[in-house]
Length: 430
Image 1 (cartoon, one colour):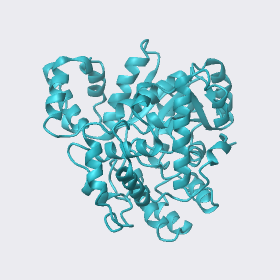
Image 2 (cartoon, one colour; image 1 turned 180 degrees about the vertical axis):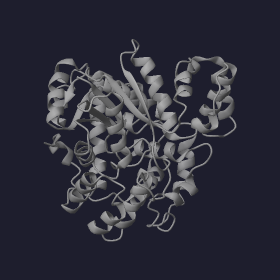
Image 3 (cartoon, rainbow, N blue to C red; image 1 turned 120 degrees about the vertical axis):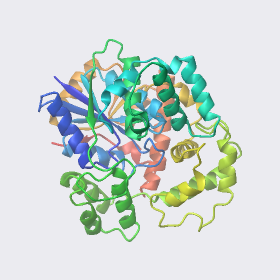
Image 4 (tube, rainbow, N blue to C red; image 1 turned 135 degrees about the vertical axis):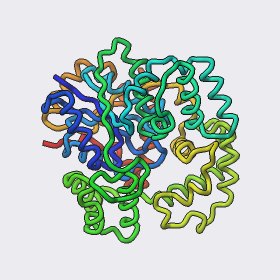
């Protein structure tokens, strides 16, 4: 049985995701290969709540080609690329059934990424010296890391267009996936599939073309949802930009009251006011490097008009708060950690301690039966399953409780009872 693990957020599921699933099956030359995405839960890698609850996004994926969807816990999904990548790769390999791992890249030069992943640059003195040197100039960690990698590669005779190939979020994540595979899959049993991303860039807000970015799609949703939710208006804007089944699943769930689309401006205002009122933030994850003091200074100026209600993509917020030293994603991850109570002790847990199943179809059900015998971690179908395990596994208990706090906050943002997560069961698509 061929099982292709895919690392994604599906925020929301769009044509590019459908292309990734289809292309992965084509590359392994097996149209019946099982596709198993590991997906972010209530919060995404950039630190914001997802546009839809996990169950809705899992249903989208299952209707559009996936067979089993599992969840990446909050501590790993709302994290820098290296932690996100290692958490996702580790969870897929821990299923015991995954034979391939597929992900998108923004470059044609996958050989450069492979060459860099084969180098032990993270433990190299030159690399770390250059990394600290670049950080001291005041630029962000991702920029400093990319520059230090470029210098290291040059010293080793590795050539390529580093400015282009290490500048996009997807390519940086791709490198971290390869580094995680090198660390976890020491016997190289997993086949790696890198698929060139189609269409608009990661951050492009242009809705033209078949492959609109998730950023553009979220912007369109937020604009319409904030102006008296109209299912037909959103459908009109997104028609052709998302698979019909994915669009229908999302709009059906929203119109039936399963959730309301989150208001990011309200969430950010709450975060900043909480930061300003908190007695101490120093031990909160990602609050190091004087970020606490910086946030308090900014938070003290938050007023109703500071971040306008129509700043759907938080562009005004970004212009006010992000700097070379503190990227917007870093700030948003720190704020999400603050709101969910994630302190630095959680970052000492390096890999997910359980596998939570979000949904499956008939082919996926068969795969799950095999996974139940092969998995190297407990397989969870509903939150109550964790209660029976947490007394024996301290790390599982911590990560589970953090996930439930993230879920509680998420459901509040989706306009539902914050305890709703206790009722959740896997989505089943026949």
